[in-house]
Image (cartoon, rainbow, N blue to C red; front, side):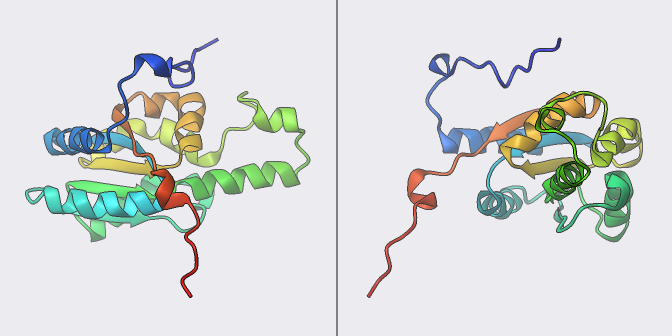
Amino acid sequence: MVLDPLEHLDLSDLPDYDADQEYQALLRAVRRQQGFGIIFVRCSPDRGNRLIKDLTRDLPRKHCDVLTLTEPLPEGDFFSRAESFLAEHPADVVFVQGLEHSLLDYEETKRQSGWTAAESRGYSWKGVPPILRNLNQQRDKFRNQLPVCFVFLVPLFLVRYLTRRAPDFFDWRSGVFEFREDLASIQPQPHKS
C-alpha cells in the first residue's frame, strides 16, 4: 500500500496560509525552470485565470501561453494535443486548464456502464482513465520532445487522482502549489436595489 503524502498532513504543524508567499514561491519555481518541467497548481478556475495574468506579467523574459481544454480529449491523448499546440504557439511556459474534463467524462462513462459505487471510488487498475494512461506512458516523450514548463491549473480532486492513477507522471513534478479562495470571494453577494 502506498501512502498519499497529501492526504495525511497534520495541518496544525503547517504555517498559516499566505497567498502572497505561495505566489512568490510559484513565481520562483516557474522563473527558475529551464526546459521541461511540470508544476501543479490547485485552484479554482477564476483564481487560475488571475494567476495566468499575474505570472505572465511577472515573467517578462519567458514567453507564456495558455492551453485551455474545454472538452474531453479524444482517447485521452494529451501529448498529441500539447505537441500540436506548441507547433502553433511556441512557448517557454504553457498554462494548462481544463484537464479535468477528460476525467469527469471518464467517471460519467463508468457510472453509465453500471460500475458500482465501490468500483468507481476504488483506485484499482481495472480502469485507468485514458488521459492518465497517456500521461504515464508518454512521460519520457514529454521531457525529450517538449522542452517547456507545463503549469497545470487543476482542482483538488485532480491532484489526488494523479497521485494515485498517474504516479509516474506526477513524480516528475517540480512542485505543487495551492491557492485557496477567500470566503468573501465565494459567498453570494447581496443584490443592490
